[in-house]
Length: 116
Image 1 (tube, rainbow, N blue to C red):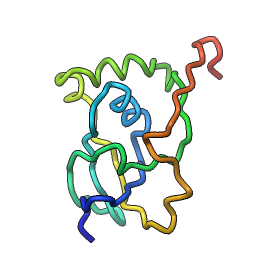
Image 2 (cartoon, helix red, strand yellow; image 1 turned 180 degrees about the horizontal axis):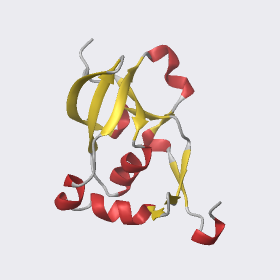
Image 3 (cartoon, rainbow, N blue to C red; image 1 turned 90 degrees about the vertical axis):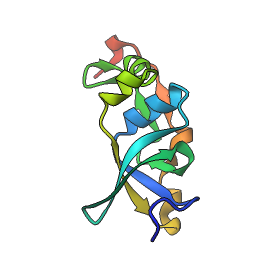
């Protein structure tokens, strides 16, 4: 299987917040580490339309960090250099429906006081 074949879909294993932040920053894709069966296959930039998320929405606050601060980091080359690659796995077409396209993941903009 060619890991970067056009139209191939990849499930985000680690990095949904980073991926959505890159999308919101106006980037066309994000640096990803493609893995399969626990083996690293390739480090590459994938466009957002090839990424699937296990989450339909993310919260503005993640581990006490403001999502929009992450978006601001993604808007600079120096900021992106500090952010690790997103880990993804190839996903068979028969199960794509189980996940949310990254382009459709919503940001829930609750205030810090509303955080659990």
